[in-house]
Image (cartoon, rainbow, N blue to C red; front, side, top):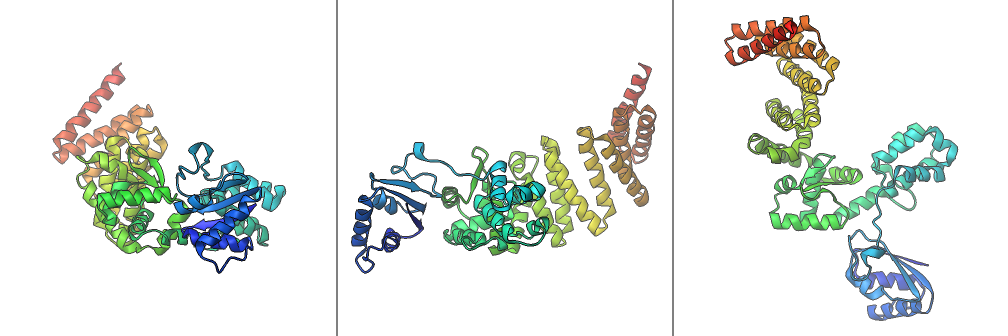
Length: 436
């Protein structure tokens, strides 16, 4: 068996290294003579030739030899046609849960793996079960003397290296090997939502035109640096470890500011552009964190409202709730009680839709307390309106009528006829239901 690393290098350099490994004594000869010598040596023997990490077509042209040589290739390219057909190709993906566990058993033994199974599989999940990261991590844990849970917590990207592999350095080399436009696109992707992003948004932030951006995207997919989540919706994702390394290299402040600004421009017209906003809802959360860090509370409030309103309108309630929870943390930090009470009320509406009535009830109590403290009568009326409808679902007729009546009185006092009439209709329905 002959193992040869190729990488993004000219064929002459790869074959010169191969000839030296075979000790053919042709190191000082011209490249074509070295190639001929290596091919001649291989052709005389039954050999398994492993070409690792192929990028260049010239390597395949020169070293696809046929019998008696068997060939095994690895590549991040999606296809090596016409030399290796798709029938004879296998896509290597992340380890399964069982495969990751088997690696820990090999390195740490059955007893240790059983005892600390949750912590070990938690680490594997954190690195998205990337095979090289799991193996290096397991090897490092084998050498550690600290308790396993403590050692697992210390396995950060910058420490994932042993005598054979340095995971962070491998990722860094892969990033630096890309063109300037591709790196720019990767840096933008690293500040987007970890769960996946909409390609047109990253294109806008990166400042690439559509043709160049699509070419860069395709090359990144072919290099296995970018995953396709949904081709039709143009949703993609990068690996968590790659994201971590990119964020250590990218101009984060500049890109996060551009990211937040692009989202504001999009969500400002959310009622007309809701389809595009739908694709970018998860992006609101990292943008809110950036605006929070920069003390841009007014911008954060508007973006949060637009994101929540979009999610609520189109039924994306899970992400709408997460946006509100991010917003809640901002208002708690700033001590903005009026904004906080609105967030509680909106969260309660979503929880009520899901049937999580007790949680919704607790949030409405918090909203009521803040409204009373602030003297905010209109928000208090909305709180009582929601509370009354919640009590209806709990079959608490007395509380339902009490809260709806309180809401009706406040809306009448504040001369809010649309809300007053809507609550009055709910009260009439309550009376009719009780009569029935």
